Image 1 (cartoon, rainbow, N blue to C red):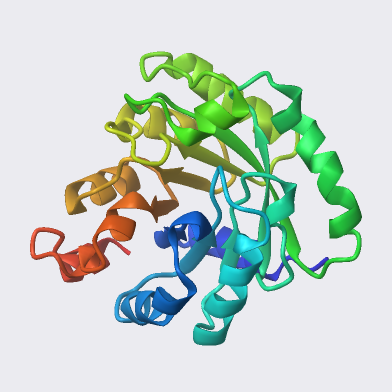
Image 2 (cartoon, rainbow, N blue to C red):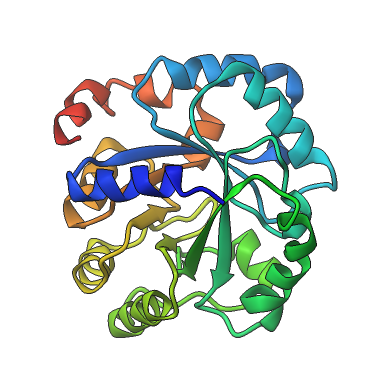
Length: 251
């Protein structure tokens, strides 16, 4: 398995180049609107496309990925809710382990179920420590995984969880407030985690404004993921309050 895309992420981190990813949930997408969605993404400086969701009908992820692949050359990362979302029509699999929870199904069982598929796959696999942070609302991740998020005030716990993930060999850490979160991951959490790990840091959930993007980046995030905001508003990156051109200066 090649490490072409992970090398790109490492080089971007070393160069302090900040990356934006758009998260597309297959359960909330119709095949017919994908060309329009991708055209919109191409009009702005989006670096990565993440595809996945906590609850997706069997086969829907593969269907959506096939269509996305027809319309873009951007790197496509599977952000899976479970092993059934694995598909050859992507470039990378975020091999997630839910480090913030204690449900073995999402710590190791789903990963074991994925192995027969991955042994025959050409996907680049990036081991990723996934940490769910309380975003002020019960998210799909929380319901499906039957785990509790870490409270935003428990900064030491978040940091220690992230560092434990790094020591276990995870290649990235993903701090997630969850889809539709009312509160994004706090700058204090991002800053403290960033200072204590040497691997790329992804931050997502509840980010809906230019200020929140800039705050996440200035606090130490290497990749910011925009999901619900773009899902609900195709013109999110054109919003005058977002001032996307100004955002480019911090890249």
